[in-house]
Image (spheres, helix red, strand yellow):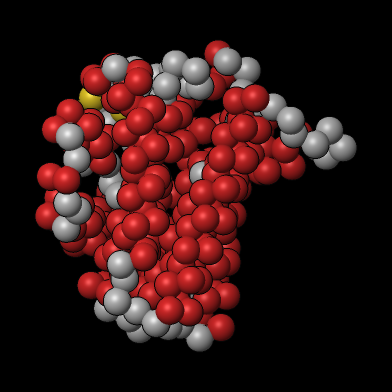
Length: 301
């Protein structure tokens, strides 16, 4: 993509993200009763939750809800629940027993900031709080049940992907590319797919809309991790805000490791096209999701 088009796509994407991301930040700061916690636990949980980031998952919940005819405000608790699960996963993935990362979003990781025991317990807390957000939703019981099931399934699959990525156990009767896809569709893709489906559920979407957003979420979810793989070998730690070059050093399965940089970019382009095509049934209501996808395909951090 020419640099002028890339700059335009980046600017548009960031504008699309800003409104729902700001809504999510405000909700996390003001609607969660942090004061009920012991101060040091509250500080750790807030550090692991409010420390920035693009909020892509809750943004997808909100934009998917709106694309299916719902209101952003109705999706905020579900978006917060998903973001709390995501933050829990980052806190635990960064621990010395797993990825042993010391930098996240340009800041020390929680176990560096508050100690390993507190990081473990704060992560546990965020997971519990996530499902509490769904339980308090003012919505028909069948929708709340569907949201709980969606979040539980996405969390389960995310953990499966992390196990594959760090502890192995992948099926040996499939090709290397299929193994990488299996890791990525679970480790990263599962929560992005869940985000789109949860947004659709909040809107009371019809089956056709849920199907379209599911297909979009699956393509975007895999694309997001392929882009991450590429950034790990093409960008600096300072630019990305977390350690880069670790995957290849640890011998992890990645797209650039198997297909090279150009081959990985070709996969990103293909998944981008699949995601955009999936939104056709939504017509103009899907435009923000198209713009977001375009940005996610070319992001550099």
